[in-house]
Image 1 (cartoon, rainbow, N blue to C red):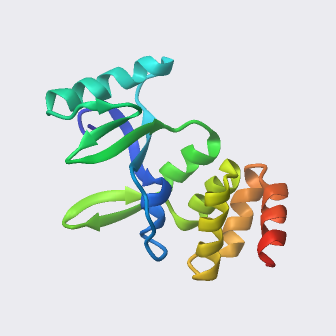
Image 2: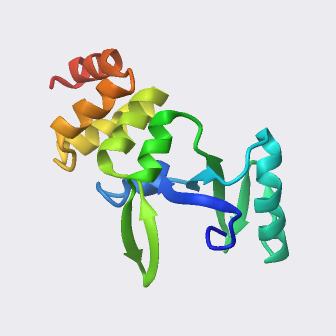
Length: 158
C-alpha cells in the first residue's frame, strides 16, 4: 500500500512493536501507524479499506482481519507519533522488510496515552534496559510530556 501511494511511511506500533524489545506478553491486534498520503478525516481510510477488501480482507469493527489477525490502521495523529514513524527502525521479520517504532518513542507514546497497561509496559522497557533514557528524556521534553515522565518515574522509583 505504501508503494502504491495509499499510505505514506508506516511503522508497527503498539503492543506488537513492544514485543520487538521486551519479553512477550498478550496482545490481540497489530497497530500500523501511517502518514496519510491525503487529508480528509475519516475519508482518508476509504482507499485503505477498499484496497484490503479487494485483496480479500474484511473490516471487523475498528480493525481489518488479515490472515486471522486484527490489524488497525492508524493515521499519525500528533507530532510525537509523526516523529516516531519518521524515525522508525527498518527491520526484517520472517524475511519481510518492515518498520517498527523505536523503544524510546514507544515509551513516550505510552506515557502520553497514560493507561495503566501502558505504564506497566513502559516500566518493563526500563527494567529490561532497552531504553536510552537520555534519548527518551529528550523526546518527552520536546513533546510536552515532562510532567508525565516525572510522575511515571516516581511511581516506579527511578
